[in-house]
Length: 262
Length: 101
Image (cartoon, rainbow over all chains, first blue to last red; front, side, top):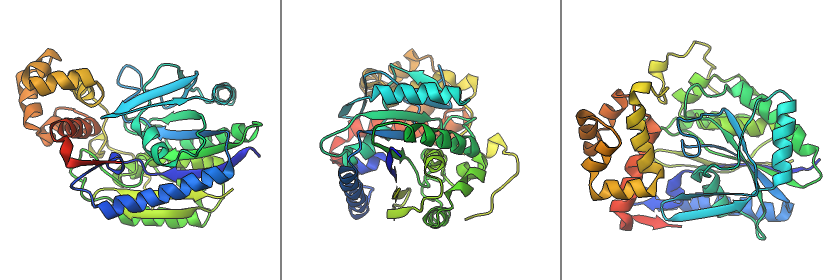
């Protein structure tokens, strides 16, 4: 069992660069929860973090839109505003995920030359343990229809979990994204907090597998297209009960930080 | 948890829609504002010229410069690209409005 921890973290950029429209107290509550994740990671001593995030049309514009992708190679880098970042990739595990994923029937896309979106960076900015560890960045298409179905995300996550458990390294899994938000639409100021809370209750009861049955349409209607990253992680953690570190919704975003103790 | 809907999705009801090919240049321009610092700098220096250089027609340029989200969405712009392009422009034009962590 080399999967030592699993987490889900919000990544809204307002947590990194806070405009005057954001309640500072809410932002700091999320930072505090991120701090707990960082301490947990330091206690769990992973050799790497496998992080599942939804690319915000950053690495993959319309020249190629993979459903699932693995970043392989020695490092990955990106920028957001004046933040520039670069992370080493744990190449042996990245290649194992890619090769064993394909063997298991998932036709994965891979890249050695794609910009790393802030969806990967924001939670790591706050949670990367000291000393820092390399990543295996894993992409799920969340914003460009047709996205992979929640069931497919769950199945991929289940396979991913088996692959990671078969490795000799100590691996932490992190899903980045969510919860309800509607950037760029007329629903922006009306996140579906009730739906979020219902999902968090379900996760605390160890019933995350039920999310595999949600439709893509429902994720879109509730502002939760990014929950595909959580559903992928849920495939890997199975019936583990979630511990909610915070649910701190802003006027536009259901900020949540969760651990699945394994 | 809310009841799971089993109805087939109508793409016109989705918040995040398939980007139609007719909107490719518009979406490419928004992607440039979001993700290409050099293009963003050119846009900040001369918005109209930068947008026209990306192949946008007169009406698209008008809606982009006006920041008319609904008009851009109606033209097939992807909602997330509209959102983040506007945020990136704002971050550059009004950097003091942000607290950086």
